[in-house]
Image 1: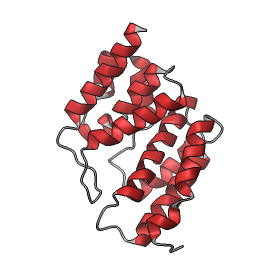
Image 2: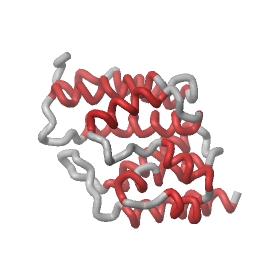
Image 3: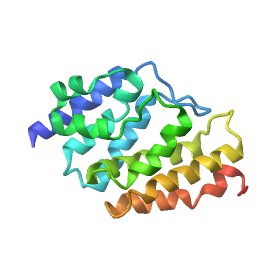
Image 4: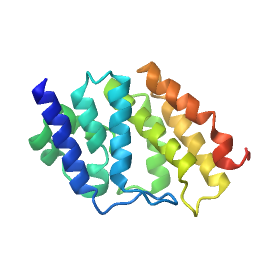
Amino acid sequence: MGQHVLLVTRAAHFAAERHVHQRRKGEHAEPYFNHVSEVAALLAEATDGKEPELIAAGYLHDTIEDQNVTHAELEERFGREVSDLVLEVTDDKSLEKQERKRLQIVHAAHLSHYAKMLKLADKCANLRALLTSPPPDWSAQRRGEYFDWARDVVEGCRRVNVKLEAEFDRLYARRGEATGGQP
């Protein structure tokens, strides 16, 4: 048990250090660490704290994509299971944004069980953010498009965790709040 606590707390600390200068896009410009912490918490709750590698990956899931951390660095610090999981959910930033979004939908059904859970938790956290602190420059239409895109990604991630799926569905049902009732 002690090793599991150590893994998760080291991942949290590493993520906090790497994302220290990054802010969320929302109107409140929250520290980005709040996002990865929320993803990790969703995963901890969904697994009753029994999957420390998954929880650690929740903290680390954006480090390769956003902070120029390498897979090898994550593997050295956190082990192969965690590093491979982070890599599996990492977008290829060399591609155009629309292509990355399309590929998330296409690849979702082919992800591993834990990667699907991580995607679900990430999308839940993102919908929560759009409901509580949307980016000020995002129109109601753009917020609605994000909700719909997230739904399309999540459709490929179903049948992995009832708690995460229920949370996503609860948040998606609030789409009208994010769009001011616009379709």
